[in-house]
Image (cartoon, rainbow, N blue to C red; front, side, top):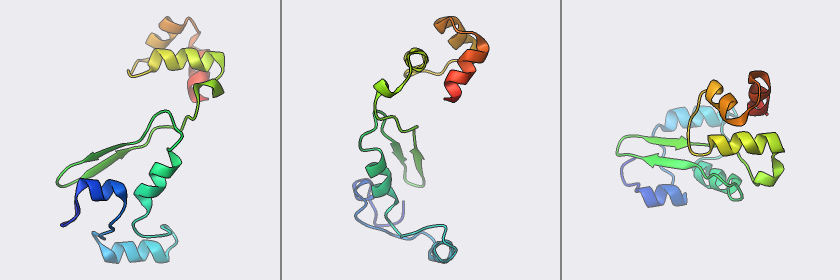
Amino acid sequence: MPDGLGKEEYLAGQISILRNPIISGMFFRLGLIEQFGTGVQRILKEYSHSIIQPQFLIYDNSITIKLPVVQESLQDLTGDEQKVYSVLEDKELSTSEIVQMTGFGRTKTLDVIKN
């Protein structure tokens, strides 16, 4: 974390402290970033209606943000997708384990996961 910036302030997006103003300025001029210090607020806004929220892991010397796939409602999933989702919810499984638990063939399982 930049000096003077706490976890609460970071997550609230109230303060922007550039860690490397030269690189930030270069990215801005190249059009790779639009604004300084608005990323956390924009992430939270995009996930406001999502079932699964992003995870912010904040340490003294690093920040990791895990951005899950945006899913507004399980009703948007097909029956097959809901079945695979319920098998995978809160755990990691191999393809063969998913095939065994859903009763789908390997190709169908992979197609459902891709969707």
